[in-house]
Image 1 (spheres, one colour):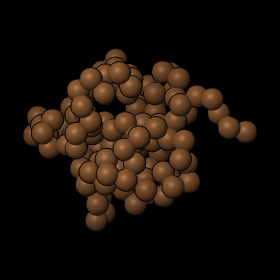
Image 2 (cartoon, helix red, strand yellow):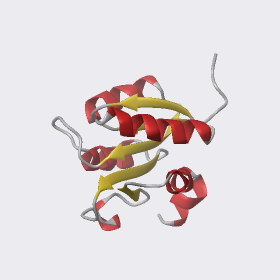
Image 3 (tube, one colour):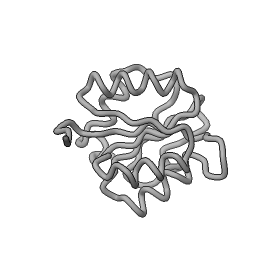
Length: 125
């Protein structure tokens, strides 16, 4: 049975942070999926084309980090709204693909909710 709720993928290698993000988005009306690295994220997106929002940590283990994942998704899945999270101020908006948004950790639940709303992401594209 297909859900009528929008779907989001959280790509986060720290399970607790991923669970918190998942809870925030679930409470905001999203079905959520979780991946621990970019390779798992790509597989999840292939299996679930209904995913329309990806929230990824900038630093992920493995050969592809979250920034490269965001760049690839921006080219290959331009329909997906992207939020790139990062600890500390080192990541700037200019570091992520056009249309993606930066969210610095720790973030408030309201900040994440606002950024995954379609209008907010498109306004800043």
